[in-house]
Each structure stands twice: as structure tokens, then as C-alpha cells.
Image 1 (tube, helix red, strand yellow):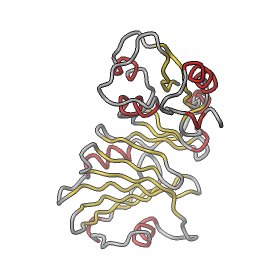
Image 2 (cartoon, helix red, strand yellow):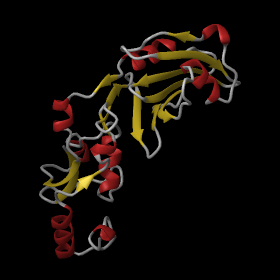
Image 3 (cartoon, one colour):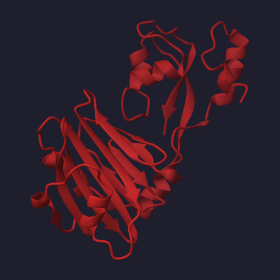
Length: 231
């Protein structure tokens, strides 16, 4: 929209800024919950009927084709996606067919996870160690991959993650609303104060600064309006 194109524009007049903020107040922000949504460490996808929680230290992002996650220092990463399976294809065979590196044959386990048929395996690359899982929920097969830099096996965190996979309840589906922008007045000059009101999974201050076209360390103007993200 015309108002959206003026976001953070340098030199925007006071009157224009007020018009712009009034135009964006209440607008939806981020994911469409029907296509999956991140809430803190939890990912919920009502259409697929599944949800899971990632271990502490991970930040996750819902993209068009997968859920991606990483730790702050980048030494651990994860991926969750949906894969095509041929009729009658075993879950261990799916892991082998959808993974390019070698899988340790002795590591393959075929056993239920969170009540769903599943297969898990270990793969060691040159610079990363991977834990893999294929889990069948109804007629759909999902793949969960966790990687750790170096030779460290991420198995403990991987098992906590896979064990958290669960069905989405009707109550949670009904309560899942889009995040939205809210225009609020700054009570102090501290950007950190308003950033704490941001309903985002991580980097609240950075996201607040970008959202408002601000630079780190520049004080806010008490009484002036700024945008935050709320549920």
C-alpha cells in the first residue's frame, strides 16, 4: 500500500507519519496461522494438524517449504519438511532416498515416536553430524533433521524435539490468531522497554528497530508513537 511504502522513510512529516501509523495500526504481521505459525519455541500448523517444540537455544522460521532453525552461534541447525513417499515405501527407505550423504546402517532405528510410525538414523559429514527422522502422521510423511557442527552427536536434543511432535487440538487451533501491528506511545526513551512488548520468538530489540526504521543506541522520544507486534 501507499502507506506501507513510506515505512521508515527519512524526512517524513509529522502529519504524514500520523496518517501512516493510523493506516498500519492493527494490520496482520508475519505468518498466516493456517499455513503454520511460530509462537516462541513452538511451531503449530493447523492445516497439517501437527505441532512441535524446538529445544532451548533455537530460533525457528516458517518458510514456504520448510521450518528452519538455528542457534545464535550457528553451531546447530534444524529442518522440518514434508516429503513424498511411494506406496509401501518404508520410513527407513525414505530417509535413504531423501538424503545425499551416507547414513550409518547400524544407527537406523524403526520405532514409534510420539505414537507415530518413525525411523531415525545418524549421518556424519565432513564438517557436520546429522540426526534424521522420517515420521508418518496419517497419510503424510514428515522429515526432521538436526545438525551439529563437528563430530558432536546432537541426539539428546534431537530426541527431545522429535518426542514433542503432537496433534493440534481444536482449542489451540481456535486460539491461534495472526500477529498484528499495534501503535503505542513510548513512555520513556528506552527502545528496550517497547521491544519487550514484541510478540516475536527472538531478537525482539532488533526487530523493533527495523520495524520502526531506528538505529541501535538512538533514544526514543517519550510520547511519540511507535509500532510493536502483538498477539
